[in-house]
Amino acid sequence: MKTKAKKKIKSLATLKRKKAIGRRAKTVKDILENTGKSVSKAMLDAGYSPSYAKNPQDFKKTRKWKEIMDDKLSEEMVAEVHAELLKATKLEQAIFPLGVADELIRLIVSEVGCVVMKIVELMGKKYVWYRAPDAAAKKAAVDMVYKLRGKYAAEKFEEVNPLKKLSNAELAEKKKVLLDFLLKRKTK
Image: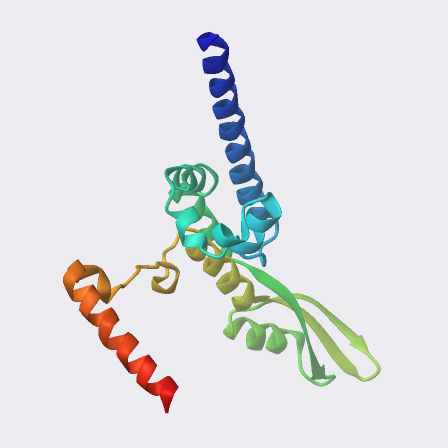
């Protein structure tokens, strides 16, 4: 009889552990695949309770979260992404008067850190397509990595409770003073 109860308890514990692992994995996968999604929203979608999802910093403090982050976003990977992001570009276009020489256009564009891809003469103008550094993409991606790893001070949460240091007697006194104040206020 005791053996069946122990097995049942073990199987329930195993089931809970597997469910927790699944939720963690789903949360992390969701965050990595949907760059704009918050940790709280990903936690809710994975099946965590709303009260736990309201405090994603608790989730980020877990040993498993840190292990997953080290696995999915290792320091080496982050360094590689940073290196790639420093080179991120986007295609832009500019229009020059027809009289401007192609060499001068290339010089002007290169002086601001861009690379000319193509120059086309059309309807009395020169249309220039060039690759320009994509600062917004660089910032957004780096920002996401820092947020996920909890590197921003705003993401790190420390509970400050001035009442925590008080003794029971001091708390009782504060409670009495507050109740007296509220009762006086109510009678006015």
